[in-house]
Image (cartoon, rainbow over all chains, first blue to last red; front, side, top):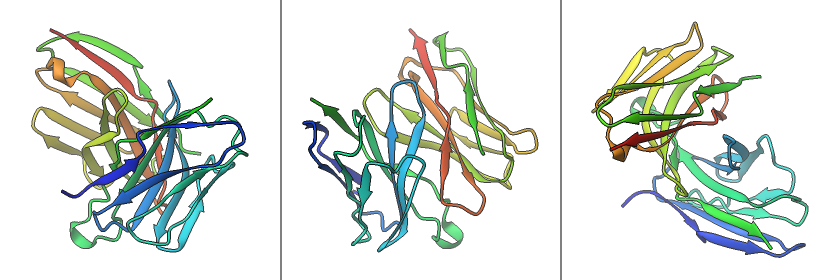
Length: 117
Length: 112
């Protein structure tokens, strides 16, 4: 089945610790995204990548880092510099250069809930 | 700066009622608009995507319309069912960018 997987589903971080959230897709999509969702707020863009080995900061990139070494993988590291990391993290992908049949629909993974202890 | 607003924030309706969810945006220079459904603690599921050149899209009991000039989109749900209970979000993609701007969502509860 094609789709996006995120792991782990739940993650607990101690103060001062870096943690990495995994995102993998087998949809052959070029673009991938990381969002943060807080209660009562919409999704806010952390980082996005249009193609392998390239990524751009979103609206709230401070305290986060990413890499895009493979088309199917876009891991997010939450560093100790992120002062309020407790949130629900969502990864998404789309295919903006899919030709005539591309609809540029965003597909989302199931999310990772990160809690700081 | 693009802002996306969804009103109301929450809505309760009896089963079988037809309902309309609203989404408004401040900048009409959009590439497309997408409606999503989110169940508690889950990821987002795409419902409908409307390209900027289109006026509406339909899928089963769902119909989404787009009026770019007035900065509005509506999601119409016919004959609502308890299984439709979820949060519905809209998102716009700005022309010339890869960024999507999301609204805060409408939390829908359909009562049996």
